Length: 171
Image 1 (cartoon, rainbow, N blue to C red):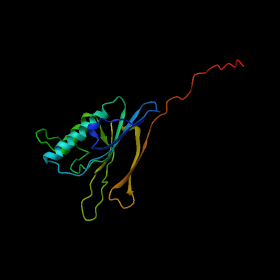
Image 2 (cartoon, one colour; image 1 turned 90 degrees about the vertical axis):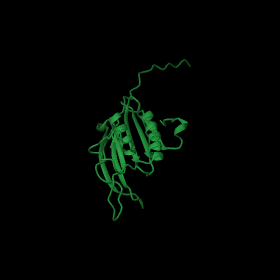
Image 3 (cartoon, rainbow, N blue to C red; image 1 turned 135 degrees about the horizontal axis):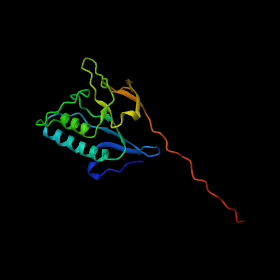
Image 4 (tube, helix red, strand yellow; image 1 turned 180 degrees about the vertical axis):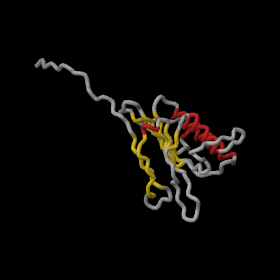
């Protein structure tokens, strides 16, 4: 089921759906955040707007999966560090991730550039890592410089047994 977002977020590249035909609902959020400076005032403002939207989407009583190209090359996902007095985009997003108990499930670089350092820009974040299995970073799709991330989402189906009904034929 498509999740409607407030019109004030129309400028963001975010799509959200709820998988509701399962025992426990799962919210899937796919997003893109363009590359930008980590400290410029405009970048910080835009990142706060992006985080505010994601916060509103993550504030649900279900498992949440966020995937996409977030362009935070300076975040070390295996060891999130915070500098409270420093207003950096990467720090703001790291704090958001911790507040919503989001765990990064991609453990290797996803952005491959020849002659440059490879980066982990594409993420698979989840507040319930037991519903995501077999995360694999594969070759880039077509001519992209971003690797493909494959994974399996475990959504246990709810019982589809319908109560018995008596049908009477009065003809």
